[in-house]
Image 1 (cartoon, rainbow, N blue to C red):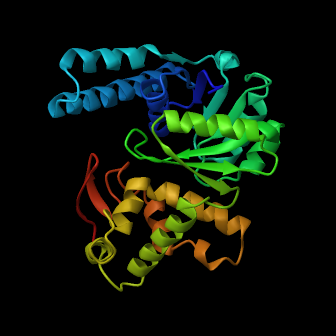
Image 2 (cartoon, helix red, strand yellow):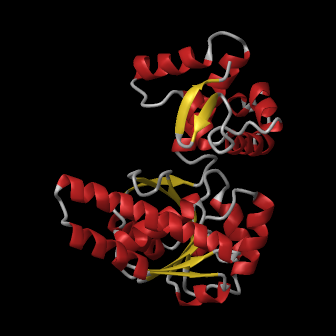
Length: 302
């Protein structure tokens, strides 16, 4: 594998997970970049906590002894270098961008990144809905831009969508696929298109569940129970929308509805806008379609 050092830009929920699997699973050096020392500390603390939990489970199962498990945690942490200095990315073969899902923010970021990454480095975005072609135009070299869309929680979810464009270098694509496999994930390829595979199918599904709720056809609990028992889903659509973030779901739908006017699948339900407008964002705010205690949905909001 030609990738030896990976930069992770943004050490939030997704970025910290990507940094973790790159160090712990692939055994590669990681430059973890964020804008403030506080956000870096939060991200690094999150990685250590996640690794410690996984180590505890390995010890409990008997797959590792305590000394080995703890040593593996320290080894992974030692491979991660937190920094607020963008120029530290100059030493990276690949930079994975996990910045906030905001087009104007990312547009400026990609323009700035020309000065902070090596001229032969690959740039991957963890975007869940923005087009890679649009991001690569801002960066200025579409031959080395692609999407690497991981899923939350990154250490546990097995999938990584790899989003390609006609201008992407096959050599860079092969290198990134090799890295994803080394991280312990399964790559699937998708051409650059709205929502790629998972979100293109999932977000309209969530929107339809919200619209069904808006019409008063069924309660939150009954909608979710129906999809869990009737379709074998581990989590109902309204609980999942809460878990993802109602603001994130709204942002994706609004972007798609602007870019593709008249597409019925991208219609924004009124109830979704109302909840986000009132600060009910789901799990992250403690209330959405459910009342939440941490990561646990306690009861529906009716």
